[in-house]
Structure formats: structure tokens, C-alpha cells
Image 1 (tube, rainbow, N blue to C red):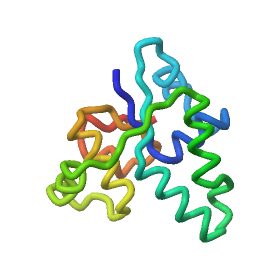
Image 2 (tube, rainbow, N blue to C red):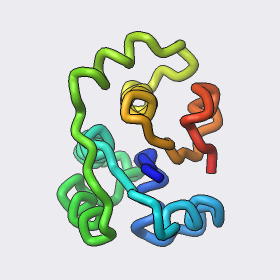
Image 3 (spheres, rainbow, N blue to C red):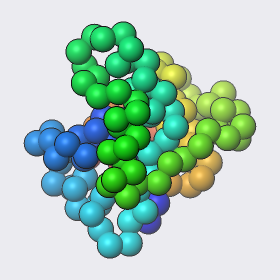
Length: 128
């Protein structure tokens, strides 16, 4: 199964955070799971880390290395992903989250997220 991790789920997974649910851990560690992180997540990390707000303790370069070390694959942002964002209902306003939803729908993949609002986008979204 192809799993696309929401930014915070990906960060929680690589830091073994207690915020990562047992269900998420099980899905990520499943032998048949291919775990993906979007370039959009690296972009989000870069922006938030550069703003030094405190909610993003690692840089995008550090995150990329951690994701690589964990064996995660990287999903590029393709034109089809950007175009699909336009067709999404306006359940969520965050541009990074909207792009992740579009990527999950286009590929298709299951998007693992902790965000209840994202779960409104349908069965490709798994709230963990």
C-alpha cells in the first residue's frame, strides 16, 4: 500500500513521538507499505523553520536526511497535482494540506493525517 504522510505525521514518525498513534505506526511499519513524503512537506518545513516560530524544530535539509534514513520515498509535485488542487472542495484552506490531498487522489495513495478537517476529503484520507 502506498502511504503519503502528512507533514506532522512524517515528523512524528521519524522522532518516534508519542503523538503518533498506534494505528499510524502499524500502517507505516507494515511490510507491504511504501511510505512517501511529498516535496510539499519539505517546502512547508523549510518555510516554517525559516520563520523560527518554534513549531518546526528541524530544517528541511535535516528532515530530508531523516526521511531518507527511515527509507521513505519522495513524491515530486507534478503539474497534475497542482491542477487537481483547483477541483478540491474548500474544506481546508492550508495550501500545503490541499496539495497533499490532491497528490493522494491523483496518484492514488492513502494520506495519513491527524487533521480531522482533511478527513472530509474522502476515503483516500486516513485520520490517524
